[in-house]
Amino acid sequence: MGFISLLMLSLLMMAFPLMVNSPSLVFNVGEAAGWSAQSGVNYTWWQFGPIFLVRDGIRFVYNPNTTNVVEVTSPDYESCNPTSPLATYSTGNDTILLPEIGHRYFISGNPVECNMIDGYGLKVDIKVQNSSMWREVRACPNCIIRRSYINLNAVPAQAVTIL
Ligand SMILES: *[C@@H]1O[C@H](CO)[C@@H](O)[C@H](O)[C@H]1NC(C)=O
Ligand SMILES: *[C@@H]1O[C@H](CO)[C@@H](O)[C@H](O)[C@H]1NC(C)=O
Ligand SMILES: *[C@@H]1O[C@H](CO)[C@@H](O)[C@H](O)[C@H]1NC(C)=O
Ligand SMILES: *[C@@H]1O[C@H](CO)[C@@H](O)[C@H](O)[C@H]1NC(C)=O
Image (cartoon, rainbow, N blue to C red; front, top):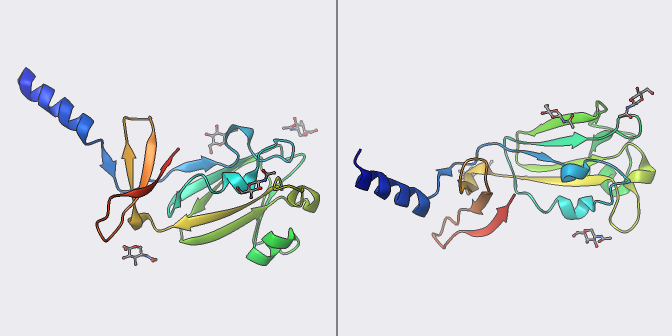
């Protein structure tokens, strides 16, 4: 390939960053702070940051001596009731796959932590969306990833989230 065509190719790649159809990502709940009642993380705020798609995962990292993760129904999420768990996790590093569209509810097995006032309760409501409705754009390998909603009515992409 000549220099000019190589140059053209690089220019083209800058203009049209690699578009892939939503490969899976694993999101750390609470980012670096993990899952902890002492982290100061507002988990209700955190859950609205990422766009969770079918086939993604979420990872809970925590001290298993002090807390755990309990998956519950929506009413038990609201009332911080861990006594009828759908699943219980306690290794301290649990990755949970999200194979279906819909909500998944996770709380601390300790109602005191789950109920903490002012929005800092140890609980998350993960809304998993249809991957066919989103496209992922990578500006470069391992760099910024954006997920854009595909408007089927051909209006320009909207609701871009940067991870
Ligand atoms: C936590 O985040 C939620 C959702 O954004 C918000 O409604 C609530 O006020 C926040 N709590 C605090 C203490 O900032
Ligand atoms: C949990 O407790 C065990 C036994 O006391 C200890 O060996 C371990 O280091 C503790 N783990 C953490 C993350 O504090
Ligand atoms: C948690 O487990 C994943 C693999 O499942 C690993 O890559 C990661 O480093 C672990 N994190 C911690 C904090 O142990
Ligand atoms: C996901 O979106 C695609 C494209 O609009 C649609 O064909 C498919 O039925 C949707 N899946 C579900 C489970 O809603």
